[in-house]
Amino acid sequence: MFRAAIEGNLEEHMKRERNDGGWATKSAVRVASNGLKRQIRAQTVKAGLDRDARPGKSVSKTWQSQVYPARRVGSFRAASTVYSKWPRAIAAFEDGAIISGRNGARWLAVPTPAVGRKGNRRLRPGDFRGALDFVPTRKPGVALLVLHSKWGKSQVMFLLYRQVHIRKRLEFGRLAANWEARLPELIVSEWDKRDRRNAAATE
Image 1: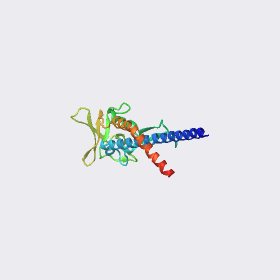
Image 2: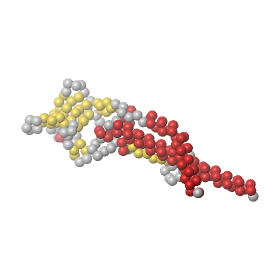
Image 3: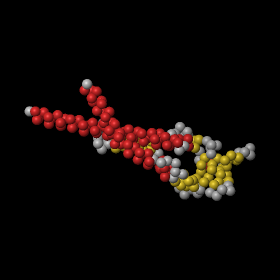
């Protein structure tokens, strides 16, 4: 009888430890995931991408995180992903890129502040129905689209480029590696917190 009681308690204790360990691991992964997301958002803001975004848009807030398993269970195999809802643009700023006109267009048109809006987008050269004049510049690969008013006033509406070089402005790999290296200590910390909560609950 005594031997059976000892075995039964040990099995229950090990089951509780496995459960606590699974939850501690998942909690630690969540802490790391949220920390990485905050740092990536901060780096995105520092790189000026929020400033360059369209009015009312925040590039930094496109960064989201998800911890797996998504259901409410602990797991020693917990994992997370930090991702952007604007992946193609983010990749260009992380790796650097060369942007050219789309669909075979010879020029990439960049609107100036003088260009108005049509609904939720900026006006495009085609919206002016031939009212813009092409003006070359002395700089190779750069030209202007100019609007001439009937009062003789001219205004630059679009800057034209053969191609635009986007320099590398983001670096996320080092941030992710730092949080990955911290996972063991985070798991221990979260496990200790859970042990203290369990001890307090039994007092």
